[in-house]
Image (cartoon, rainbow, N blue to C red):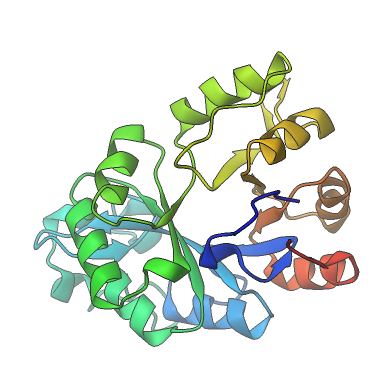
Length: 256
């Protein structure tokens, strides 16, 4: 459990947190209105999602920078305007959604946003500002440069480490030091990188001592969810928020 005396508004509430990874996409395509609504209906308060920039600079909710896997089309998201992307059927009548639309249409949801490319930075900032959503978003990126460029324009927004930033902090924790985490609110990591065990009780304790939460992705087995929470993990990023709600309901505790 995080030891922050005054948690960011994004983290007020209860832990362990359940992050619906790209929504709940058992019956709807990932990162769509249907998947987000299904996640909220299943009890998730947090939606993990991704943004990619369109040709006209709009941050579009999408994991991939190209259209092959998600739309069965050649080309990249950046080749199309936001209006054109909004007409593409991703399955079941679901279409691409802009971040601005997602924040407006799901005003009670808290979003965990991964900025996937440079073209999405300005659009992400604009969408969050227009929705006055700084208190209910966490912004991050695999790229430290993209993360810094985005959060620099959103003073006070919650953020988690990029991969390189986490690795430096993890090495400090690994040798028994309290990681230097100024400016961060969470680390969001897999339990393992290949053969390397990343998440251990000692590592979790040292990040908590540094005042940040530990969220683990992507965990779909209820037994693994319960095991990680027993280690002290604050949040589970999962494709199956419906299963997580049942598996973790009895372990919920209030964040101090």
